[in-house]
Image 1 (tube, protein in one colour):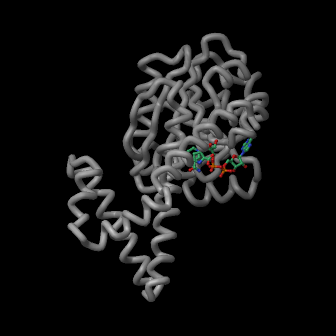
Image 2 (cartoon, rainbow, N blue to C red; image 1 turned 90 degrees about the vertical axis):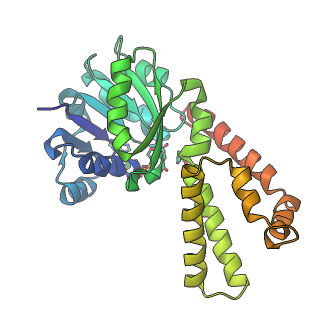
Length: 269
Ligand SMILES: NC(=O)C1=CN([C@@H]2O[C@H](COP(=O)(O)OP(=O)(O)OC[C@H]3O[C@@H](n4cnc5c(N)ncnc54)[C@H](O)[C@@H]3O)[C@@H](O)[C@H]2O)C=CC1
Ligand SMILES: O=C(O)[C@@H]1CCC=N1
């Protein structure tokens, strides 16, 4: 039997990870989940065929524990787990703000390997961006085991843990900023008199096309934007308004606020 993976606190992110693990070919009897509500456990069993266990059992019987509760619930979960975690477990925390040092201290297990990962919701379509940082006792082998879990569902990158709050602001929350822009641009289509479905399809396909070009063309975003921006044309008329309304400065401040919030979450607030 391969290594058993437990996903603890299987909400939106936890479920996305479970589905990714199974899509990647992990046998269903090597994945267990924990959930607070019995109805949620039943739902996950029905959807994926995974067994649901208590947090203590997960800690006792799985080799890798992936913690996907909210930062505010992490203290309670760790207190529940602490008496049951042997030192040979790999603990992976996916929560914003929570440090590996905090996880290790709350579990109180000498030498316990803890890895911090910030992924994002495109995990659902195997296009996640997952940033991975080792805690004090995590070795190359632990990082590789973590990458084996997250690579099938997207790209992975290793970063020092000191960069994780910034990473959370960029790629953890990042999909939300793009959805926000798309939503606003669809509204602009309505303002210009287009039917909502037409506006939606035009903007979504433009976003997909732009995303693929950003990823695959090898060109800098400035070059890609310049190629759209004709002299005395339509695009520069729009860009002037974006600059006049301070959209660039707003993004700088927005991501700084997200970084600061991630730092605050470290204290469980
Ligand atoms: N939603 C997102 O885009 C991203 C979220 N994250 C992180 O993932 C974590 C989870 O976020 P979501 O999935 O959005 O939240 P969620 O609220 O959907 O999931 C958390 C789940 O944990 C369960 N839970 C809480 N305490 C528990 C306990 N003691 N035992 C068992 N289950 C327990 C809750 O019932 C809930 O189902 C957060 O820490 C967040 O910072 C990270 C990257 C992206
Ligand atoms: O909003 C949040 O706190 C979580 C972390 C990154 C994305 N969602």
